[in-house]
Length: 416
Image (cartoon, rainbow, N blue to C red; front, side, top):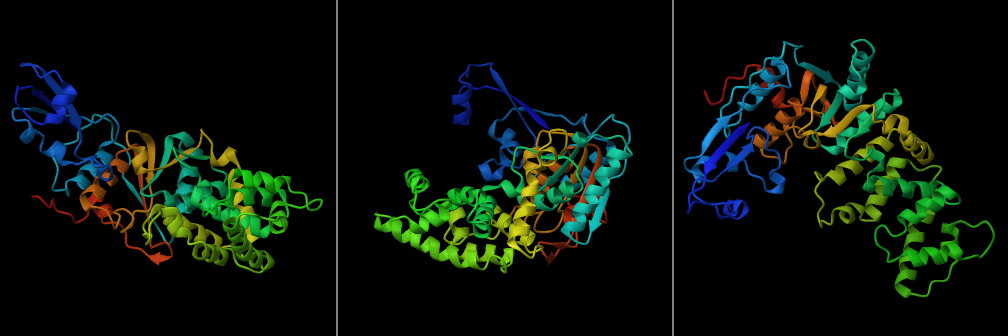
């Protein structure tokens, strides 16, 4: 971390700080604190140059380097130092600590995302049952939200409590939940569950159907015991554009209901994405990027559905995540993205998905990605696990270059 103290001079730049500070009298000063090794918000407009070039912008500024670390073991700090020294845009610092020595950084290598999650789960169980850690001592960090699915499913299956910190369970994310509700309507149209699903998706994408229409539909009584979808097919509709949209909706859903017993859930999800132009609708992009987080979540949903032979079996499975004693437990393992973990610390950290194109992201600046990784590993106080698999998203994967950098494997200092 770097601390700057700068005395005001009457005509010194920049204007923004002059406005903010206001006290630009001779002898006044202000302090700026930041860390060029942990600047990970370029997507919001933040620039590491604000720290690196501070003394050029404010000549005479005094720079104080804060190098003492009170959080992590020497082994973890060595990994942090090994990693960040590969960045060219940085201020030289030497991280120091008086904390006692700890364990070496542990690398978990797996064949797939499924076995990766099993390996993480097994280590967590061992830490709690044999080594005296509490679930709340442990955090599983990841570069992207969509990576949580495998970890969530594995923890839930083995009854290990967890909590998505400042986020939603995978199957509760809006773009995922909408398609699941389409499946619920398709597999069970004449039920209370089907009615709830119908109300949540009838206007997604926008069909110009509002609350008034739904209220009228609920009050419509063409016969006893009819549920909303059957009422929709029977109710007269005056407005031509609404009538057209409803007709198209029925033409979409009816064949899917008829074939619900034989259709594969992954196939139906893919069909809905195309028929509804759903990817474009949720991203507002004419050409949705495959790297968009919502698109990645939908891809993960299809991968999850591919393991089931029927729509009903998949829907039933996703509803097991409503067990809040496991999946939203404040005393459980913390799951979160690295960005959400910034400023936090945990005795044990697992950083998962350390493969090329995930961490580092294929669309990110390599030095910023390295800073993101630095933030992730520096959350660990006592134990740090780095995890990667040989396949990712059903494709061959290459272990992240950051792994060798952290471990110092055949990596001379690029600036030496």
